[in-house]
Image 1 (cartoon, rainbow, N blue to C red):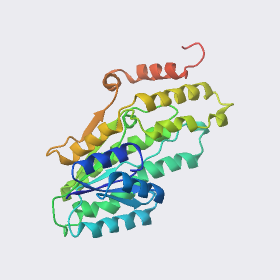
Image 2 (cartoon, rainbow, N blue to C red):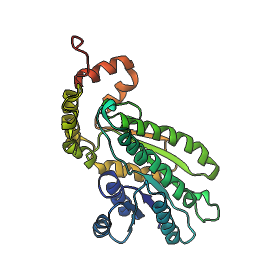
Image 3 (cartoon, one colour):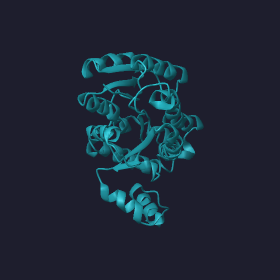
Image 4 (cartoon, rainbow, N blue to C red):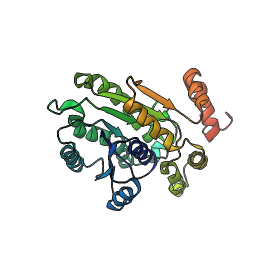
Length: 285
C-alpha cells in the first residue's frame, strides 16, 4: 500500500483528494488543525485515513507529524505530498494591515515550505529509504497567473507557489522527486462560502466599498458554480500515478476565460475586470 500526505483535509479539495486516493487503495495521512476534525474524518474515511493534527505554520508540529509518518512507513518512501492547506485574505491592499498580509503568506507560502522540508526526506531525499521517490503536488490557483484586485494577498501567495514549484522541481531532480502544480479555477469549497462572513463594514468609508460588495457577490457565486472538489481530487490521483505527468495542470469551469487571459493584452483585461467591479475612475466606464 502506497502512502500520501495531504495538508488541509478537513474540507474541500483536501478532503476530496483524500477520499479519492483511499478509494483507489492508498493510505492517506491528512493534516487537520482540530482534534474534532481528526475524529470526524477517521469515521468518514475509514482505517486507511490517518489524521495528523498540526497547523502548517507550526514548524515543530509539522516535524512531529513527519516523524509519525516516518515510523508508519517502516523504512519505505512516501508516494506523495499534496500541499493543499491555504486561506484567502481579501480587501483593498491599502486598507489591509501588514499583519493580515503576513498571515496570508505565512499560511500559503511559508506553510508549504515547512511541510515540504519536513516530508521531503520521506519522499526520497533520504536515500536510505527503500522504494521509488515520491512526488510533490502543489495546489496553486488560476490566481497564480492572473492577479485579482481586492485579493492581492491571495494572488501574491499563489504567484509565489508557481515560482517555488518551478525552482523545487529542478532542485529535486537530484533525488528523482517530481514537483507538479495544479492550478484550478473556481472550486466549490468553503474558502468561497466564507465570503459571506467577510466584514466589509470596516471598509464603509472606503472608495473600494462598491467594488468589495460586487466581489463578495461574485465569490458567493463561485461557491455554487465552481468545479466539484472531487474533480480536483481525481486529478491529484492522476498526477500521483501517471508515468509522465505534466509540470502544470490548469482546470477551470470556464476554460474560455483561461484562454482569453493568455491571449488578450493585459491592458484590455485590466479594463474588463475594472469595469466589472466598478474600479474605473468616474467618466471612464
